[in-house]
Each structure stands twice: as C-alpha cells, then as structure tokens.
Image (tube, rainbow, N blue to C red; front, side, top):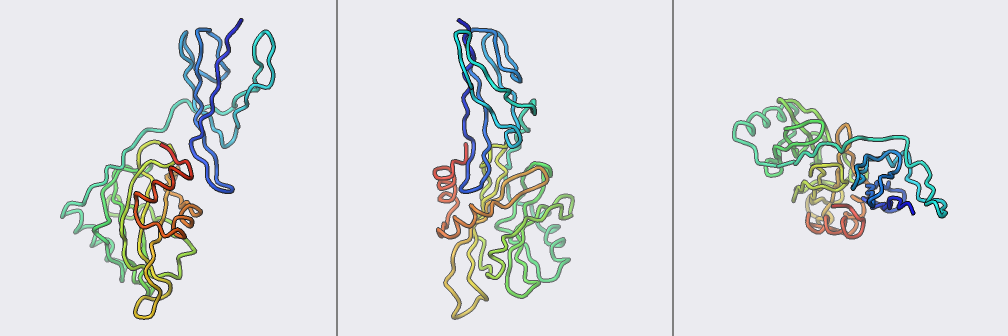
Amino acid sequence: MVHMPLLVQRGIQHRLGALALASTIVVAAASSSHSLPGYQSNSRIARPALLDLTRDPVMLPVASSHRGQFWQPVSSTIVTQQPPTMPARPRKLTAAEARQLQQLIARSPGRKVIMEHTFRVNVPTFGSCLFVSVLDLSRGAPKLALHLVSNNRIVYTFPQPTWAQSWTLLEVKAVGFMELNFDGGDSDIVLIADYTAGPSGPGTSPPFPVVLVYLTEERGYVLDDEISRILTRRRVATIAKAEDIMRREFQYLP
C-alpha cells in the first residue's frame, strides 16, 4: 500500500465578517518518496513551499481507492521562501536624534513631537527609521498624526480612522510593537490614546480610550479598521488587554 502525505491546514488568522483568512500549510510525510505537486521533499520529510492562499485555495482529497487518495491541484502560485524576519526593536531616541526630529516636525506650524511615544524601530520596507507620534494643532482641536521618518524626512504617514475625525485627542497612552498577522518580525502596531467627543474643555464627554491596530503590508501599513472599532467600543485601555482579545477571540497568531 502506498502511504500518501497527510495535508493539514493550520489557520493563521481569521477575522469577523468579511475579514480575510490566511493560512500556513504543513505537510507531514511517511517513509514513502511520494509527495504532492508543489512541495519540496527528501526521503523522510516533505517541506512545504508557501502558497498564495488569497488567490489559490488549498484543495483537500476528493476521492480514494485501494491505490491511494486522489488530490486536486494544490496551487499554481508558489512562493519559495518566507519574507525575512525583521524585529522592530524599538528604542528611545538619542538627544541628537530628538533635536533633529523636533526641528523637522516644527517646520509645519502647530505640530509637536510626542517624545514619550516616539522610537527608533526596524520595520519592513523602510528598515531602520523613526516611528513618530505627533500632536497636531494645525486644524484647531488636537489631533494625532503618526509618521515614519528616515534620513530627516517623512517617508510614510499612517492612515487615521474616519470614525474618529470629530474626536479630540487628549493623550497617547501606549504604543506596542508585536507580531499579529504572521508575516515575519514584530512590526505590527497597537496604539492606545485617550480622546473626548467633540472639543475638549469643561462640559465635554468623559475621556475614553481609542485603539488603533496597524498591520504591515508591502508598501507600509494598513489600519485594521474593524478590529480597531471593536476594541474601541469595548473601551480597551491597555496593550495587554488588546493583545489578549486579538489572540483569544480573533485568533491572531503566534
């Protein structure tokens, strides 16, 4: 009897509603030299190539007989290796870096660096750069702006949620760098800030936490709008709590 490899699909990430599903495929082979098309193998272990599951879903066995199982083609798109891992390694700025950054941001009137939540980091696409939190007063009510700065110029500006545009920033509480979407490194970002509804001052709404979740993508970052909304509605106030909910309820890995 021919022993065919066992295909196991491990869910890497799923979201609520229409959120995308990404998966890692693990192939375990017996002593047989047989292997599925698209997989690299030796006499003992079949090593999976990575598949683009957003375009080509993996197919499970569709029939079997005394000669073994029949398989549909696994994928026509093969990625031969994982993206390089790039730990964020956030650290505080040196005095010289801080002075230069403050001068850069001050070129635009009404903007000030929030130094407690500004770091030098390593991130995909941009490499070693500065993650910069900015208090923006140029439009009247305080707003939050987030940038990546490299070689004394802004190379990337993070998207802000449209549903928070009318709110007033009070204070950035915390920034966390972690691995959420299994793309290598720990460069995904969770930021928590206190806001108030409408303008600040006496008689306004009590402060409430807003959670922003940014996932790395090929050209920078994407705001996970739905997860950010959910965590904000739940009044999540710490990075630890946000991470616990994302991993326990939404199955973010690892």
